[in-house]
Image (cartoon, rainbow, N blue to C red; front, side):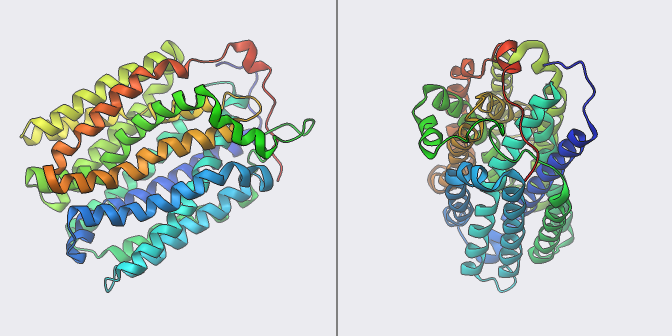
Length: 407
């Protein structure tokens, strides 16, 4: 993508607001996930039981993802994001307070609410980010997801420090909730893409929005996103625990391993913008899939700390671009971009949110390290479906309607 005009101040404010939103969601999720080993110990739970607990967040997210495009069509992206962030903050607060006793039902309730908020925010921020990318005229979606990664790095870093200092989970969760709520309040006055179509044409009907599920392209893009989302989600949920249980590391060292993965993924997303512009989406996804596979093999089969740290880094780079490029490809649809983003996100989050808990149940039987072989299989599947991410012709892009920016 390219452009010959400088972006307006309004467009830059829009872009920066999206950066902040991606950061907030990344921080909230990683701040919680980095304390999974401590939560497991506090509850006296098994790996499978922890998988069930994590699954409650997944349920809320997947339910919300399934109808988010309809909410965006009715209320706009800004209202959807604002409400979603406040629900995410509220859920984290409830779950954090539930760790004080600990009270498992209260933790579950908080995670469900947080999941509902995360799902709606995710679709709206990806749709809005893709619209901003189109208006800016250059590849920026990986940078938005890099902001998410910066958030996860910060969350994991705070988690590692808190674990090393013996800080309980509750204060950390309260801080994450306050940060998320503050960003929700800050973005209220910032314009975001509000509707999925131009003012001059009618909005897609409910039937049109649902019809994207019948398009083969939706499922092909969804397979790429599913495979690469599982590559990322499995690390977020289980890499720290795999380091602790599979390699005998401390909780703090496990958080550091997760931090290495998240840092590498962030670097991959920042550096990947130029790579995408140079070789395109398809070749980029193929290359990163190979890198992820190499890193994953090192983590699973090489019992040495250096291999674990290095494998986590390669795994992070390999997981960096598949998901954001899938979102960009889904949003290429000039009329039903929000609906297709919602559909692809739903497919992908079945991996990002639902598969990792299922890996926990499998881990009870064969060990968490060998369970990660499932991720390797889906990396191969994502690579095979990569041609579905091929860019539209430039002429097609120019014909796309401009997003509205009012609410």
